[in-house]
Image (cartoon, rainbow, N blue to C red; front, side):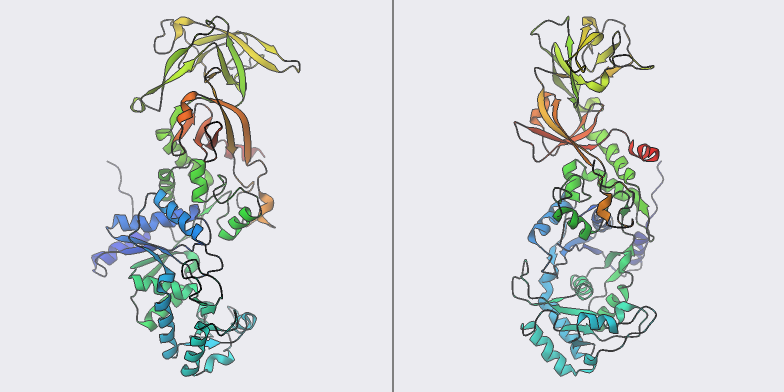
Length: 553
């Protein structure tokens, strides 16, 4: 009997809230800003928020925090929805902070009427200077003493478009001496004359995150507002606004964000990689974006399992990228179809096999019999991997070499009789003889060999481009290393093999199916593939050799 998994601290809070009757049911939300594509860090938050809703028979909203029209686009909204659904989750309601612009404006007016907010004419530099430091109290703006009537008038004029960007802001009137810098009269609204992706030009003032986020939670009656640790200092303001406005008392809780080796999780830095051409878009398979990982061949289940393994904690830690790859291999080993592809081709001629003859051999489709079998065409001339041949066999070499015998996967045992070289001294053909009585599934020879290699029939082979991906960065933590993080980009993160050969069953390959190229790794069909030019991405190698390679450096 397996041991029951212990609860994380958020689950403990929720169970206590449900037990004591604080809530009859829970409502969580995933609130991304549509200013970029989601990455693996967001996947952790998605799995947490939606997972809690599922576990406790509650609901989860998808709410777009679209309060900054300068950076937000419909493209990002569409990609976020696709990513959440691909991960296997469905939201209760699709909502937008912009849905609440009228309500948020009235709530800000309410704060002004209560004497808890004022319009400030100070420049950003003046506001920053007057805020003080964590050890030095701030100083009040000269505009702090404005009357309620004047503030209402000015705020109304801000909304009407009377002022330019940055000319005025609305600030909360709290405590300029608070030890929490976020409570020193925080900005609540700013002026931005910019076209919004949903509301167009209807608004020229937009709520700041701290105001819009908490009040959107309250408007939706979110019971558990789950954020990452950097929002701990914001919680006091979150609670203050709810208290002063008398809105639904949502509760904010914080957990450790995902930090992972050999990548960066900052949207700003990921955007740099895209706009400066270091990668080929947000869905480049080297990117830690969900769309990039999907294109590379990651499965939704492997990402969900990864998020489950790393758990939810209150302290920051660094997760090794190898753990994500382990979860991926674990899933692909169970689900990927087995096929044969030769990446570095070398001709093998079976000299005693009848000219022009073709056999249809049976080969397994997967790791067990439940996956069934497929037909693989076999003929006299085959492609094999160049690395499977040595002119002079090394000790414990169990593959092809003069005089050596191997089994061709799902076919026959062959003996290497010799080889030829081209004018440059490079081996260009291997000559072998086969043993007819050794046919796989019907072997009557009693002969045993230690090596089995894969192959593709030349007459039936399909040409393919294969893209081999490595980690995008050469150092474990590029985001915190000295200097520009981009100088740590791995110049060998992509290797393109233009002339690989794959078995003809892959003519029907789809981008949603995962494949194991026997002995070479896990692959998927890329979206740039075409019927006359198949393109495969290597998702991950069969084994984790990367850690060992790093230690050798």
